[in-house]
Length: 97
Image (cartoon, rainbow, N blue to C red):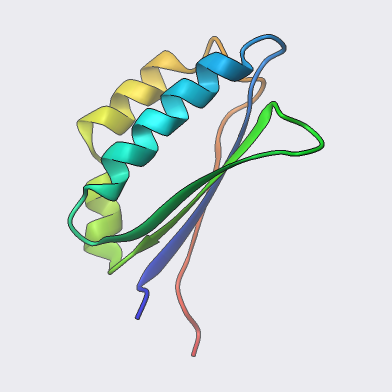
């Protein structure tokens, strides 16, 4: 059973799509190696290739918080301000039934 599902959306500034994609792919690879990560997928917008959505599934809140506080995610947050159009939209959900 999935304990936490995360949906993160981010938009690259014009001309920064490749740079953002490379960073997001690196985070996806590292996230998949985290204990308690059940799944981590990265999607790129078809109509708008500057838009990226990451969907993560975590065993429980502790696994998600371990990822969320990881050094590589902190590094991403330091690196992306100059290449994103607006702040990350990070939402997390828990099952209701």
